[in-house]
Length: 240
Image 1 (cartoon, rainbow, N blue to C red):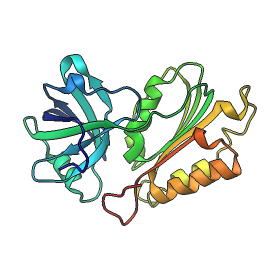
Image 2 (image 1 turned 90 degrees about the vertical axis):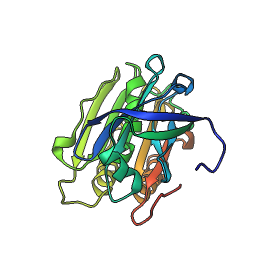
Image 3 (image 1 turned 180 degrees about the vertical axis):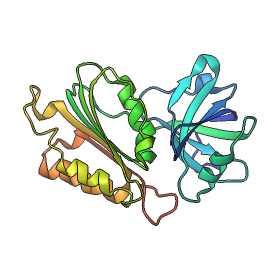
Image 4 (image 1 turned 45 degrees about the horizontal axis):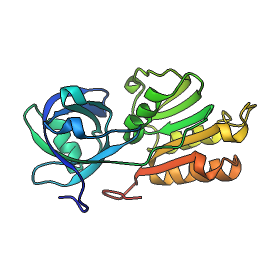
């Protein structure tokens, strides 16, 4: 089921909550979930379904006292996990393995660029949840339609740009164009470049383009650019 040994947790679905036209939240409960050990934003687990594959998903919220976790799943394409999530009901069984994922180095950051499509939106929101009020955050989120914008909560000073495709743009194009045109990290910064950072995730080709721009054109330090291709056009179960 899983390539490498890691802590596993037998869970069952306790609730499903549609969030947008492409995103649904599945709440899982299990006796060992208090021991899941979520330590920082963007951590993820492998979710495996009976007689099916496993895929990586961010833990959106962990409630150890209630023995629950929330995982937000994008209902895109015809993948087995997306099909399963679209019809999941309370009582359905699954297995979680993990958590995994490195902690983004955001220590001392005063200005943060967040860029994500729907696949990475749950991870981006875990970062927003924990940002302090000393950070100016600029978020660019590509979504399917304008109605898919979500309420956001953060202590940071936040400027959000929602980028709805509305069926008129290929996935990744709006996000790429918006970040390439943004100048939010180039103005006066009391902390200098050490105070600026970026976290970008989504379609792999788009993320690669933006990473090169942030490192080469804007000159951000390599350890301040966190870039991850969550999926890739034309490739099933992309692994970066």
